Amino acid sequence: MNLFSEISSIDGCFLFLDQDLTKFTTMRLKSRGDLVEIKSIPSLQKLLPILKNHHKKYIVVGWGANQILPHKCKDLVIHLDFNFDTNYLNQQRDEYDLPASLGLNHLTHHALKFSLSGWDFFTGIPASLGGAIYMNAGTNLGEIGSLTKKVRIVTPEGQLREETINSLSFSYRKNHFIKCGEIIVSAVISHRGIDPEIPDKIKGYLEYRKKTQPLSTKNCGCVFKNPKRELQAGRLIDLLGLKELSMGDLRVSPKHGNFIENLGDGNWDQFQSILKIIKSNIDHFYGIEFELEVKISYD
Ligand code: EPU
Image 1: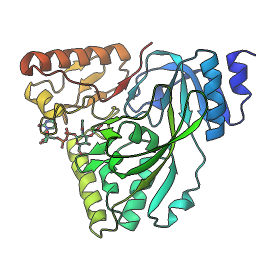
Image 2: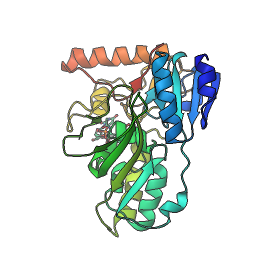
Image 3: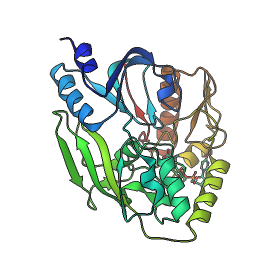
Image 4: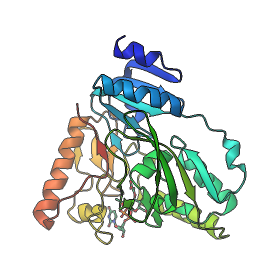
């Protein structure tokens, strides 16, 4: 059987060839390629060994909020869409066992309802739980890694393994336990107790983001990691007067220097060109090498 017939024969795997993938990233740069939607962990366990046998590379997209896909995607795009009964979030718990494909917005809603302390760390981040854990997403209030207890992962051989999280598992926007080709499928997260001030804190934080970030535009969140906590990439870009630098339909946001906005038909090449200009200026004027926060895939 060829690769595509093998994939199509797996229960809970839905294959779409030569798809428009543009809507799978929040930046909305034009992209096409082959996509497989996965409905359950066992389906993924069957899929990955097949891809391994065929030497087929893959990219996992969650909410695509921190990802850039190439114009023509050669790798297979895997999109997790596990079933989840949202009634699970109707009651407050000490720990939550959740699928990787769940949007963080569900969790923020839950934190607002039950005043869960700690869940304000990921308020307003447009991400799936798996994507957020993969990059230890966070805000200036804290990071999701500090709330994570266990992470379940499918290996390229189709094994399900469980990682128990410790103080060395994460650092700023990075995990230290997911190996090449592994995919996060679920996680257990806790909170820091009940705090009646949490709803106000979350609402205040959302207001802050609305005021300081271009949330209504097509973008991929912060493009670069902050070189240091007190040395923010956005501020450094701003100080060099690079806000509103543009390339085709892409421009550095006038609201926040670490965001690039797609005002229409921006493409992958223009994105690369803007990055190059920013990086060379930052290197030239500050002697700092910016590290990307956004994950870019290549043709
Ligand atoms: N600033 C400027 N000019 C700018 C942008 C920022 O002077 O164009 C100044 C601000 O006035 C502020 C400081 O830089 O004094 C920090 O700005 P901000 O509060 O926006 O925080 P940040 O470090 O730029 C981080 C995260 C964001 C997160 C915000 C708020 C990183 C790379 N970014 O941004 O996360 O939303 O804090 O919690 O760590 C993301 O990861 O995708 C992301 C957007």
